[in-house]
Length: 86
Image (cartoon, rainbow, N blue to C red; front, side, top):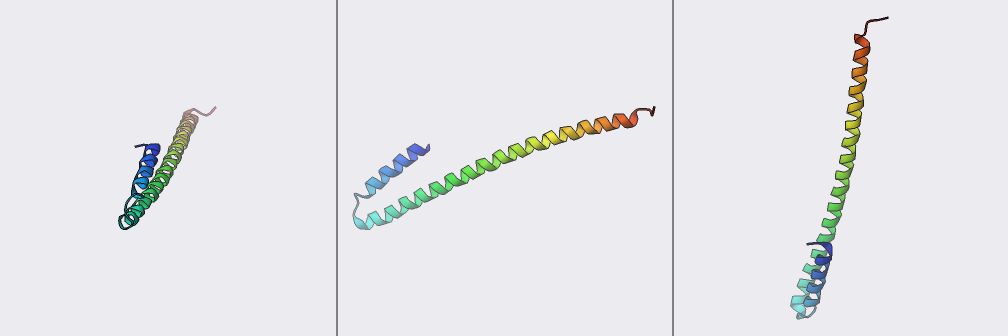
């Protein structure tokens, strides 16, 4: 379910709840509000998770670049050591 569908369905639910008697309405309004709050918290958590994954991917790219540069440097230095002195 996408965000728009969720918000639409929640709004429909709240409209239906307002037609109920007071005793039932209060409890269901509280539950609908809790649902909305949990949904917002879940969206924030997912967004934070996406940001963390993006940062991890970038860090891995930098580490791979550094590893490749280190390998090239090591290869160059080994060749220098293996060459007979002139």
